[in-house]
Length: 305
Image (tube, rainbow, N blue to C red):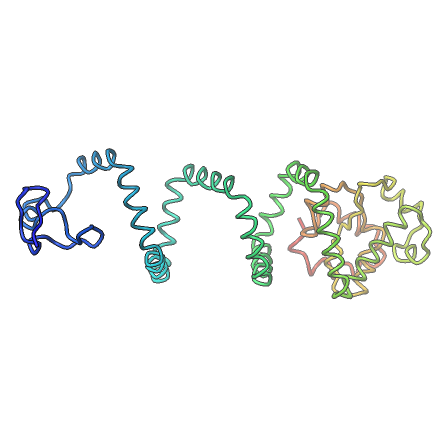
């Protein structure tokens, strides 16, 4: 068999051509003689001109090759990444640093075009990795306490806007979470029932048992809070109720001195992640069991700011 060289136009035997896997006949278009005469390295300027002039052609060829060898390429990429994790990670970090704006725009565009797909993937991943994600979240929160607190403090307006835009969603999630915890966690059940009873007491002042827990009468409790309870306002524990480790500590933290009235947005931003030192002074000045209260505070001293 013979073949014509694209460079010198001489018809030669196929043995005079190097093999090329992707071509129609499995051979290169230039004969070995011309190959040897051709410079080993491309002139950068000429290469750049060629690439600019043949963008679509090159793109089509690459796409065609990828479609024909998709599985093989994916497997090779996977093997390379597994064998060169540190190298790949360093390259990705270097690329992102050098192309911040480009990467940012690209991510934004991808998210806009694939919202539903991303949402579905996140949901599937979460369902398959609940325990793993919970552990990772707890680890991150512990390692970044100050960062989280600072972010919440500096983004109160953003938190407020998010809460207003997602009020129903947040409330529904909270209800489902509480129902689930109440069924499986006896300490949480006590915390929640006590909290609910105190909320009712603040509205009507009828429960004698609740009066015993908070240690003050209905009218005195309202006067101490310096504001009458209104719908939409949150009754907040200054020292978070989540810091209680047993039933006795639940009652310690439900003393009247440990309450304040704040807005829903403030409560959402604060959560149970920390306690403000300026509010803590008021609790210490009025609490009836400072010994046990101080034990709880000392145990969580890293969460006081």
